[in-house]
Amino acid sequence: MKKLIFIVLVLLTTGCNTQPIKDNLSSPISLGSYEKAEKAILQALAPLWRGHIQSKGHIIASRSMRNYLSFNASSHLAKVDIFFDAKSYTIKYKNSSNLKYDGENIHKTYNKWVIELNRAVESYVR
Image (cartoon, rainbow, N blue to C red; front, side):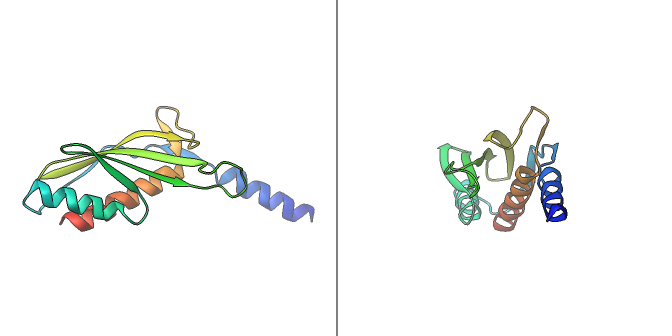
């Protein structure tokens, strides 16, 4: 039993590592128009992210994860700005909650989420 508790504690403490934030991810868009780019980006967000148009060429997207060991409805939250035009897009960190952001480093979950988001957007805009 002591061994099991030790293993769980090790996994919990090593599983919460932070790392340098992945920011300013960008790629070209080959759809030919602003309207098609906007639609493609919103479609790429749909499965895991919630997005809304802030202004022309600017979408704010958020993703949350509920921690079932906590009473908080949404214990981990990430928000990104997506700036785009007909030729390219950029994903930038906006803010987060409970992801240990210190100005340079963030919980590795954020980086995983934003890399997956970038791949999804890339697949829709090519």
